Structure formats: C-alpha cells, structure tokens
Image (cartoon, rainbow, N blue to C red):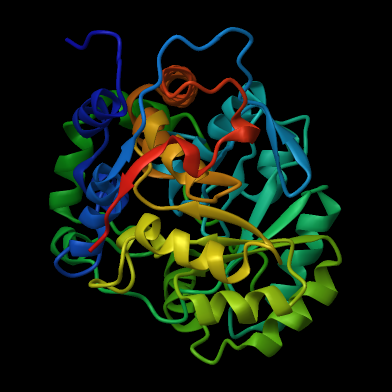
Length: 383
C-alpha cells in the first residue's frame, strides 16, 4: 500500500493510517485554533537560503556537540508524552534508534515506558525531561531515579504550569491515562496491527508515575493524580532547587521571550530550548524559529541555545543552525516514524533529516556544520 517513505510527510500519512485516531490526533494537534502550531512549520518557509556553486563539496561533516556531548548531527529526539501509545514500547524503540543514529533521546516524565525500562534496553546515557509536580517528594524521587540510571542531562520544562486546551483531545475524549469507550474500542479495532503489538507488551500506563507517586496504584487513581499535580506556582526559585538536587547538566525548555532567556541564563543552566511546546500551550504565541534570532542576540554569548517546534526536514535543521541554534529537537517527525513503522520508522525519519541536511548544506557551499551561520541566509523575514 505504501512505498518507501521519502519525506517526513510520507511517514505522517502512514502513521495516520496505522495509529488509532485518538493517539494520532494527540501527537498531531495544537492548542485552540492551532495558529501557533501551523506557524512553527510555515515560518521556516520565510527563511531563504543562499545557493553557492563551484565550491568544494567533498568531505562534509554534520558532527557537532550539544551540551558538550558529541552528536552525529545537531538533532535530538524531543520529550513526548504517550510515546508508547504511538507504538508498543515506543519510548524504548525510539531510544534505541536514536542511540544507533548517534543523537540524544529525551524521555518524557509522561512516558509509557519508565526511566528504568529505557535504561534496561539501551547501552548509552539518554536525557530525561522533568515536569514539576506539586508533590515535591515525587519530583525529587524522579530526579534521583534519573541519576541512578545514568541519565546525562535533565531537561526541565517551564511552560506547562497549566494545560493548554487542545480541541482534538476533547472531541476524541482522550484522558490521561486513556479510557476506552465504544468509540475508542472501534478506533482500536480498525487498527489491528497496532492493537496486536499492544497486546504483546505490559507497558500501557505512565510507568514513571504508577507505583511511585503516593496513592497511585491503578488507572483511576493515576488519572485523578495527574489532573491535579501540575504546579501553577512553579518559579525560578524551583529551578535553583532542581539544579542543586540534580547536580548534572541542566537544560531549560520553553523559553520564548528574550527577558525570560536572560533570567534562564542567570540560573547557571547549561542550555535553553527556544520552544512554544509545539504550539500546544499558548495559541497565538510566535513561532520558535521567528523568536530564535532575538534570543540568540540577547543571551547567545552566555548560554548554549537549542530550539524545537516545526522541524520537518533537514533544511529546517540547517536554517535553525544558521540563525544561532547549537542543536534542534524533533518531536512529531520521529513520532510519525514510530507510529508508521516502529523502530525502523524512527530510523527512517532520522535518515531523511540527515540526508536533507547534508545535501542542503553542500548546495549552500558549506562542508562543516560547525561553520554554519548567517552566511548561508539570503533572507529571513518574520514580519
């Protein structure tokens, strides 16, 4: 039915066919009107590249570093909730694909596979993303578990103190964890390959939370706990406490304003991620790529800058690098690959992005990703 995927869009179409609607929509949705979600992608088209000719394009290298760690290209897999509902054992498969590709994998707090599950099935350290809950004992325990399994960086999300409203999830009746109504049963029944694989795994809930948080022993208590735990009082003081408790490399995710970037730089964190949560929080906020140059101007000499939101190709990676990002994160592209083809699909997504990045860099007359800067930009108009 499907030919070999050549683009991220090809993987997206296959994932939509294979994954139950409620879970596909969860990954492929934004808040309210989804204007920010769309702008994250479309604003990359406003960045035009300089084509160069008759230059030496041999011996090209995409290898660089992110927070001092060697990466085969400036790309990491972003933390994504319910990854294990795109494909059985999804977080494990994605982490294995990332490890083989030489790029970082970031495990979400709201993952189906636990920190320990992923550590057991990988051989190199991965990164862990932390949501701050009201239960600080649980948060401290999460940090300690990440340290115990050898995670090499903590990614602290700053922009989810309250949940943005995502209409697709409300229409689909998606809850955390999912509850299966007759409508949901029908969606699963029409996706037999997905369902068969899910029947073969024991991982069906938020395993970082179940059995670890106080009073959470089953799906119903987990649902109540999750709905009440995101902390609207999260402040910069909490960042200081978390940094001290963690004691390792710290990345702050969710910066979309130059003033916030300056405050983040003062915390002593190792990097910030310019991000609007994939357009899933404040609808009407600016796209990540349009804000990136301002934040680079404000704090680029003080702290390493990463970016996520809207990356759908290797060209997008190169444009972000040229505008000042040391590295980028992909969420939906690898989720499409995972939903479409499991571990093979994540590998395919990374291969697509790598090939597009390498070819575009060459046609811009450059051979080394570490030398990419504004010299390859013909125009960047975000007005």
